[in-house]
Image 1 (cartoon, rainbow, N blue to C red):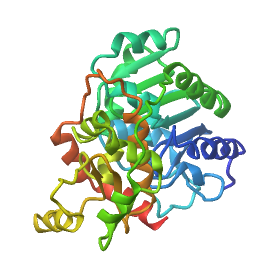
Image 2 (cartoon, rainbow, N blue to C red):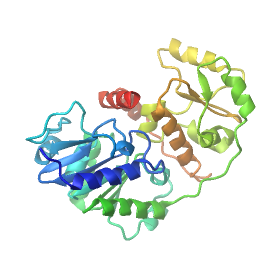
Image 3 (tube, rainbow, N blue to C red):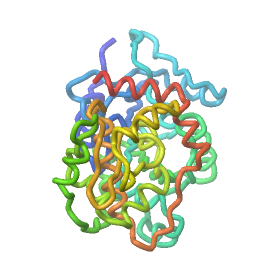
Image 4 (cartoon, rainbow, N blue to C red):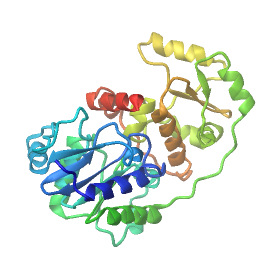
Length: 343
């Protein structure tokens, strides 16, 4: 069946958003458009940045997706007349289906996350978004739990902007251009200036990595997580948002002064865990395992972008351990990791 012309608009908008690391990182974020009873939604594990070069959107029967949400079913029916795809619909398809807007855009905006992980920012947050049709929600597990929470919220009062605690931003709009513009407006209102910190100790990092499976992080920004003691405390205090857990593991490990990277990795493996994807070396910088994919690199940069925007006196809300484990043990997220690894 022929694809609608509006899908090309969705592709162009999604690619632009997907190439902006302040809005999306790796396979994070998703977008959709409703047309003729079909919900065209990004496939799980695909990258918005690839929207114009790869076929990343799936045609889902809109009424079927809404019925699945009501029944608590994560499986999404392909629209009639379309060939079934080996790809899976986005984890957030239910969320896209329940929102009444023709276009829905979900991003992991760095500025939004930096606000949404704070316990002490509700009043200022509300003031910055004054005049927008907006809801702020607590953290909910992605997928059906989040969709049910959004459904309950929208039943009380319609909204065009959703701020998801410890997660990101969702907007609904009549067109792709309007959705992108609304994200830009929220970003402008929530913009935070990153704090400057000490540069990496390149020589010390090289010595720590010599003969190991680790290497210094490619993005110089990542080293600020370790060279600044406040950043280090925030980064190692717990997990701030789901994709960090998925691509880097819970929290951020550090290297003790008398510890080697090889020994740290060996201890993790001996305990039945994978070697840490990335490690922070206090006062020196960040290192990352040589065999990890682009997703881990992007999420390490994302963490630095978020943490350097948090005020020194911010009260942080981390994901509880049970929420971390729910993400780690979720087949849908293992699938997304594998899709990223195969990209």
